[in-house]
Amino acid sequence: MSDEKKDLEKIYNQIFRDAIIYEKQYPIQMVAATYMAIAMRLYKTHLTDDEYKKMIQTVIDSEVKPYTPDRKTN
Image 1 (cartoon, rainbow, N blue to C red):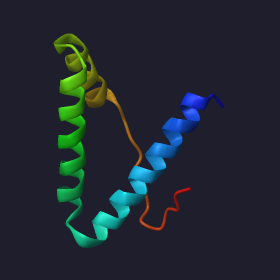
Image 2 (image 1 turned 90 degrees about the vertical axis):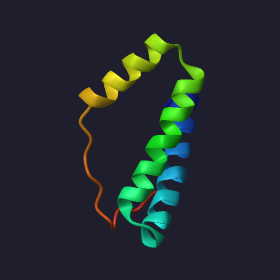
Image 3 (image 1 turned 135 degrees about the horizontal axis):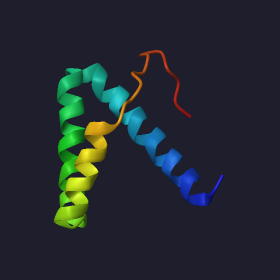
Image 4 (image 1 turned 45 degrees about the horizontal axis):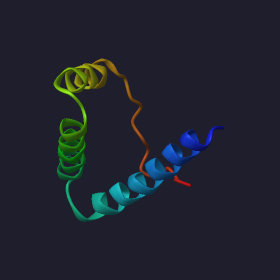
C-alpha cells in the first residue's frame, strides 16, 4: 500500500471515528450535513470551477455502502 493510500485511510478512520462520536450527541442528519458543508467549502476553495463541477458529478454518480453502528474503525 502506498504512503498516500495509508495516509488517506488513516485520516478517513480518524474523521469517521469523530463522526460516530458526534452521532451520539446530535441527529445524524446534522452531523452528515456539517461534514458535507465543510467538504463542499474546502473543494470550492481549492478547485477550479470546472474541477468542482466534475467532483460534484462524481459524488452524484457514486454509490456508497451504509455502515452498521457497531462497525469498528482502526
